[in-house]
Length: 519
Image (cartoon, rainbow, N blue to C red):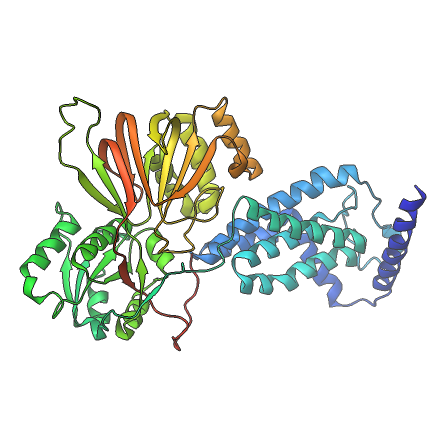
């Protein structure tokens, strides 16, 4: 007890000294401002309004808003439901403050720690994790809210300091469940041999006018930015790869002379079809992201037509792996279909067996409103409740899994839900699975998600391999890049032997405008 008093008494002395100095300040407009600010921050109304404004704009600001709201919820719950009951402390006496500084209805709960300061620090820090500029802009406001609690006499300075430390810690802790993407493009080896395509000269561009926003037809914008490109539009009922193959077949003698590159506008499905054709013909690829989420384009680091024009004009590209899966329709000795021709599919991002496609569908449906990680957690819980396990053999062992995930390259973070790729040319497959043959596997998954410990759970497995052969006990569906595309009993995954050059502006050598991160 003596040791505790030796620590607490000096803090109390400092708190009283600070409060006396503030109480001695003459009346001013600052008093009115501080009363209004501290009242606006009640129940985090101020931060909720700012979050709503940030969420209006897609990209980093929307992610910052979602992380900020999550941090506020955790910080407020910790400060008010845990710390205050455990650490009761009397608030400053209103009688010792001048009337022009005090609130009409001061709070009566424990003074330690300051919930307002905890929420303010949590929100500003969480926003700063996603967008440092926004975080710096909010820091003075968060500090003012913290000071206002001392100025109006409802908290001691140490209450505010402790609340701020708590808020910063909680915001940092959100990364355990929701890791921050530090870079806006994956690493990849530069390719110096791609031709420059000024104004799109030598580019055969397939425009998918049905992808993304149904009210927007990108043909005119593509023609404006790349006026010398040969533009094709997608015909309904025909695959993009089939249409590109036919177009290249008609121009067979011109490939390499007049046709120097292929281009595709659209989402991951459209780009994937174009990438497969580009790999077969040995042509570099131009990607114009006009889909809904554009995962591949974001990993590559291409966000708009201006960047496409910059990269093609300068002849700057990077080497990108292309995932390949061989589909064996039936398996088993004596099976009448075992001699059927093996079909080959390509994928840019991911392939999966089991309930993963449904998980992706739900996540993408909820992601615009909630953000990627909250949407994924909710989707996973829903899917696990509905899903039926799949019996598969891979890595030399039979397993019962909820789903099997295969990524085209290692995804980050490890031991958690895959979110992005730090590199595009590793030559490896990222294999992850969720076991269904462990007791209480559904509950284990949910508990691991809540604790941010999925990578340490017995239900979770992960490895990186160059090739993966998967046999299904009962033939089932295969999804690539989130879309169900095949039905078979055996699948062999690998990385294509040749990498596809994809045009990307080299930011290190570029002297133009900087590219914002809109991940």
